[in-house]
Image (cartoon, rainbow, N blue to C red; front, side, top):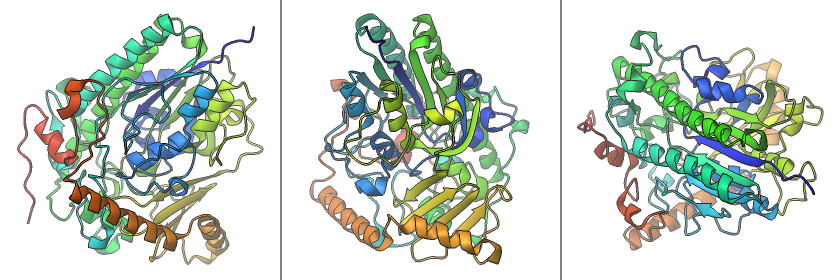
Length: 512
């Protein structure tokens, strides 16, 4: 009888930058359970989000394809039910697939191939957060603003804590259920938390795990407006950076709270790993830890995600395959679209069937075994979401990162010699040939004029529907009938999270 394929447990954080983890060199942040997962597994040192924004990143990851190929432009774009996902592929291999926690699917299909979805989702599923590029440079998209920084600090409870406590409980319980009642088939259990997503608040317990004096200010100070590249300037206005007085004290508080939020997630990772071991499943289960995108955390004066700078676009990627003698660390460039082909490689013992649709990623197992001979050492990330007003795309090949902002000057950095991305090499004759080649490669399968027109037309259609239906339909996934008013439905995330915080903090007024 053939041996059953291994189970797969994916633990996903939200807005966790690789830069904030000890495995990636951070000297202060405490994540002993994530470190523990890395023992016997592989740390991918250069792992990237293919779109530094929740919805397109997650849908791209689920489909194994770049977001533009799926016409998934922003945080309010529907993912068609006709797109095959990794859940469909694994079900074809007789896996039982379970989604626990956040996935932020937009549209009436709220499962996209999973057999079960066992918790309510936290964010809207309709067109409420549609961008509007027509408004121009200084429009204020819903969902994110600098109140998340100026109101940072300690709380007793917050909406995101409510959510992640529920996700942890449901994920642990599901492991017990799968062990008892699902012995015939392997499983995929995807446990997706919302921490350490802004706002930057944590409990006294996690705050006290760090000495405030040990928390350093950003390495790269804020840029003056006239020194910002266009994409950074657009995001500055979109986040209300011109409306709020962000003091050094609040920057310090926000970074401190974020570190506590990372340790909060690490404890949940530990609980899941403990449960696997308690059930005797650790030798039969592949475990993956990652995030959907990173967090700027005040570097360059920038916050949240949405940019192509390293703090925003890098994500942790740690994979442990039981029984595999794997490299401890891999330096090659990888990204989230590599997960689907990796899971297919794992689930079929290398006998991977031809995918139904083209894939933009590749299995990571050869790199884990030490074979990089056929690896195309490049990553692609793109951005057409809220906060910008034109298509943007990034390619990194080896140590060189090239950033294209449609209608504006290009940027290019040598990350080996300039890890803080301060010296733009465009115009430097020593790098002219590589700049030409990277731009040509970046544009070879991506037409910015066409994409710009598609984005604006899609925005017009969704904004019209949103207006005509007064915010309906509301497709928010609710596991329980009483969950219809919980978490964030069609409102601003910032306003909802402020109301749901205890003790309540009066929102900081805009600085005129």
